Image: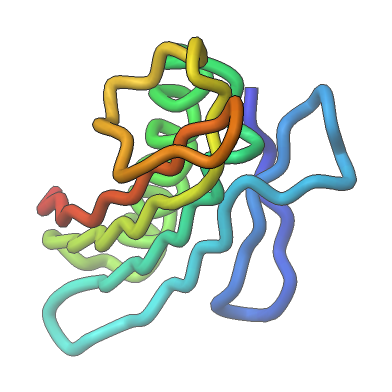
Length: 114
């Protein structure tokens, strides 16, 4: 489970219930005239497995949906940038970009429209 903490009016951090000191994501919420733009930077080093990764994505989506509803906008665009070191047997669906010792490095960027 990931909890969102407000840093400033438009900036949030997402932290695991297990490790409150580590931020797995930083999320910036920007309001436009007809849609909400959300930029999420995910640090995969703090994501232990595929289940955690999917829950982190859902936490970002929930935060975006809550802001879109509060702003009264029908459209929301979420831009994800994911990167970090993973244990080689971590089981994430992202393809590793390379390896460093017993870790692999993953990097991905994608956009969701809601």
